[in-house]
Length: 405
Image (tube, rainbow, N blue to C red; front, side, top):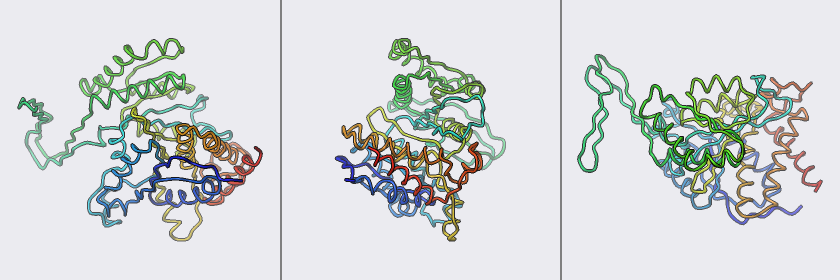
């Protein structure tokens, strides 16, 4: 069959370790044979980020502004051990944090639902979408090690010289301190992205913080959401028969566990990071969670919600066989290709993305899967496939779907 044409490139951000290996397999087996793939390529592998003083991450984010749609492989956020392992110039910041700060917006994470992979929470019947604020909090924090007794303060100096001070703590011994921030514009974008997404999906929206303890920081989030809802979205919500619901984060966790799903759960940056992993795993596997950054400026960045699968990568380097689940990375590509097709009015590309997802799900539902899923499936006698064989099996199903047209 003739390859599907693309008119506008995707921004392609390559990554690290086992997901980088899967990235190439997916392109070679599931994309390049069928699509005349056009991408503007950026290598966000840790070694190249180090060589470019992390400029490549900034360049990739700016390219996303230019083209509108990006797809990103999982990347390493280095710690002290990684500093030594990769001989880094410095402990580079999270590339996801850098990209999200440049693009603004909200990360929406939705579990991939497959028959035979049942949620650990038995009353969950519908997907739970986690909407994660993509700016600030601990990801842009300043930190300090306190060496000994002394007074630590928050100090704001206005452009007019006005000074505000707030005592953090009178230290009687050593300790640590952290200063977080956020921006009115980013919080407003977060709120509007969540409300707009809820309208587009016709789903209820929950939002949760800890405003009873954080009476200024978290309370500002709560107030911003409520004001924007009342002024801009209340009428739309009521017409659609959907609701906006606010509660404390600890109450929200309890309600989520008791619910049947089918709504959007908006969380601040750190809460969303943690809760999206919890939701993904409780629905079956962390490798079965889609993730897309939606910017109010019209930019979209698709990625897997998991990390680089370090343990499998070390096995791969030793020549040992791995059985790594590539579903979330495949769905990152399909999501980006679908959005590219929608924006370019290219139905052939959009239909291919749909069929790629159908083929991936059908492969698992036919009993052919990676080890992580085989350990939890309710399907009888599943066939456990290696990383590469799983992708090749998806290709067979994909070819059947494409040839059936």
